[in-house]
Length: 193
Image (cartoon, rainbow, N blue to C red):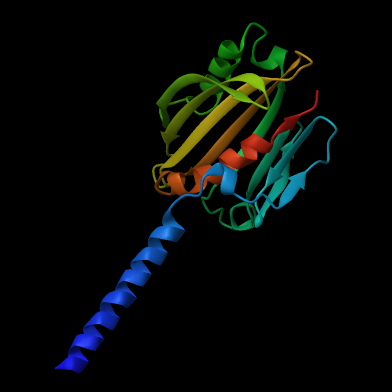
């Protein structure tokens, strides 16, 4: 009888330990606790740090993609967390204001068609000590695609000639876990023009 009691206690402690370990690994780390192991500094205009296991790829002039290796190099492409940085001149997106530029970007990009919808209203924020606007969208690229969430932030370079747009994306089911990594990356952004 005593042996069954001991087995029961061991079983409860084991299950409790597994549950605690699962909770601790599933709880998102605050952005100030995220370790960014690598730094993009290949251009004089822009630098940003990113987590270990991530890489970056140029998507053309003015476009940088930061993502986990399996997201960037998988075939077929695998959905995963990513942060895309777009650099655009003011003539492409609008000369008048951040609001106008964000509206143009959204209409030409995520809100074109009916695949994505705004889930977080436009709000004021800062990025690299600059005034910025932020908006959240969610949707599917294709009907068979996973539901994706994106937080988009726009700011202007000191030169007054370039907008920087940051689009942090992740599958909606992973958003809470992945956002702290992207938030830490955004906090490390250094616009130098």
